[in-house]
Amino acid sequence: MLTKFDELTCHQSVASFDQVGTSDRAWTEKLWCNIHDTQGELVLATGMGVYPNRNVMDGYGCANVRNAKQTNLRLSRELRPRIDELSLGPLSYEVIEPFKKIRIAMGENEQGLSYDIEFLGGMLPGEEEPHFGRARGRVFVNHCRYAQLGRVRGWVKVGDERFELDPDRFYAQRDHSWGIRMGVGAPEQGVQMADVATFTSMMINWFTVQFPSWGLYAYLIEKGDGTVERLTGCLTKPMEEGGEVVPLVGFEHDWVYHENSPRMKAGKVTLKFKDGSEKSIEMRELTTMYLRGGSYLGYKDHYHGLWMGEDWRDGESWALDTPAKADGVHGLNDTVVECKCDGEVGYGIVENLILPPYPRYGF
Image 1 (cartoon, rainbow, N blue to C red):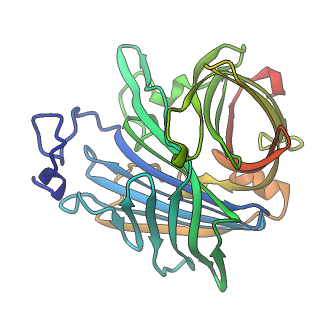
Image 2 (spheres, rainbow, N blue to C red; image 1 turned 90 degrees about the vertical axis):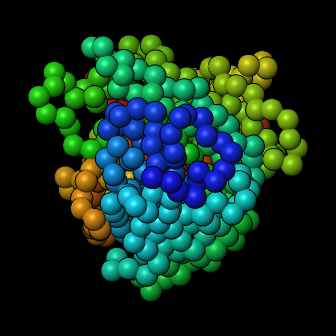
């Protein structure tokens, strides 16, 4: 079928834009954005996923207020025939000016979480090296991603409380990825192993931070024996300066976790770059976004890309006022951090996921 995208002169296959270059049901295109303030009062995560070979679009919005309560809304709809509309239910995503201005909105809904925000591109976007993996003859991951740092303006409403988003106080990071991903939909039946079965005995770190005059993107997968399985990222700078990003070539870490918990609370990293430069960054937790509320790693039998019918939604609120409650919803988390480097203060997020056994940190 034809869509509005087919009017553009950017085709790269002998097909219309409603088709992708493989019939693999795990093919996914994802949009993600995280915004947070500098005091730990609010962190919001929102995103969408498109699954052409599953005929599904899904999305979510999650807001944690003062690390005491998180409100979640998960959405899914049938993709076709509205394959060229980046909207489902009350959630919409609009590219107003590529790499400079993105609008994301959530209308009023039963969970009491709504927002109208503009991501304002601040730093040059950075591309990761493509991620490829094959096991027992089958490709289980083959995707690419870019990320971008910036600020945000607009508003977020959670229940009766409304937050006005001042770009001087609210930071933002977003990414866009596409390709074959792990953990899409329900596990396949009648196969030797699930795709995610290969992901054990490792630590996964995805780290973004922005300082006044520079920022960085860093992605590390390290095995339990210390072997680096994947390292990609870059040092970036403000868009108005132009030029090129500098690739990341080294990632040393010393993470600190909450007592008897895999939830990260602080750390220090030393990052090395291709031009010979080096950055040592100390960080501490301000607040945390628990992404299970958006179905990352699955929640309440819902996984990204799972067919839920023509129009579906679900959600809830979590109390997070004790360590036990936070541990109960821990999974893939966006830990919002205040960072210090060479006398400068910056802000960002760390996604630190331990898949045991991982002896170095006692897991």
